[in-house]
Length: 168
Image 1 (tube, rainbow, N blue to C red):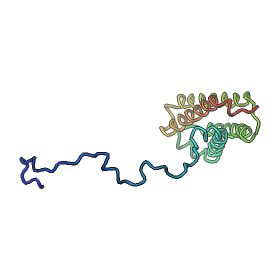
Image 2: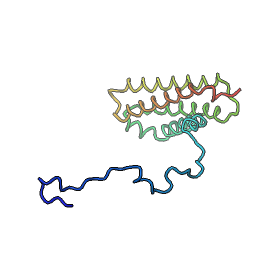
Image 3: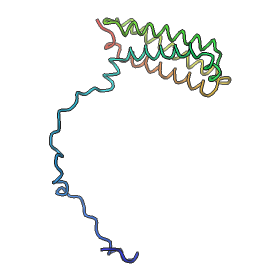
Image 4: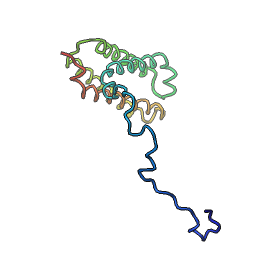
């Protein structure tokens, strides 16, 4: 039935309510499907590859700062020498984290040293963002802040999973 006048609401057809029998002829619902794909949870994948992520991120950041230091200095509004120092520090750090990632046996003390280095570098980056807050560009401050947060998060994860990352 069609509504012929706005005042005649009773002419509007009723909408049927969904009842269990409405869904009864849908095939396959509730039936077992194909065998599920093995569960590769993000934390397990992340934990297993955390040291590799750490060393690759450090190497990429370091190489980028060394190669593009002059251009990044203008873009970020920070001294070129600072970026070259940060690039070299990132590469040295990446070499250490690579040495851990490539090992089959790692002591807890070596993981602890990595965590402390990450915490120290996060503090340095946060401190630099504060020191250069008046002279750096917003992009420069953001880059320092993002590096501080990223490296700090790595330190937290490496500390949390230190027993799994170290091997007897």
